[in-house]
Length: 120
Image 1: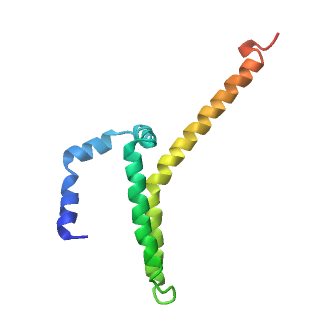
Image 2: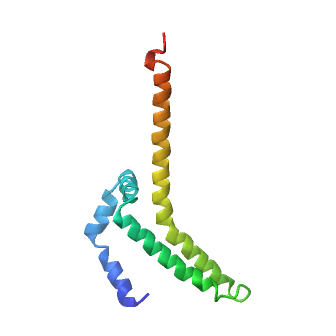
Image 3: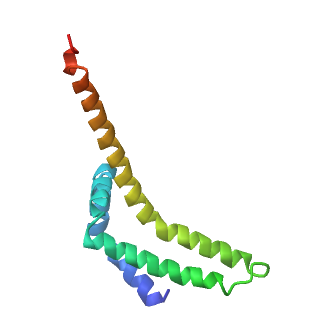
């Protein structure tokens, strides 16, 4: 990465941005991330991730596993890192769906039993 870019990125994290980060709860973060799925922003993230993975995977074709195992391991780690946000958002979505389905099934079961008081 260019030194200019590194400095710009470091300068981006102003006190205001750091305060916003520290002021957000983990629960709020998860809710916002869960809300990304299905939006145009989410599709852009997926597209970016897929394009970057394609570039990295192309590198595997040119690397010699005998002479360059460290580079291969580095690229494998890069792929894992690129997929982290995608996997986190999808796991939040699926966890939420499982909980909603469980709550729905529990409610249906309660109704089948006559509500809180049973059939009698």
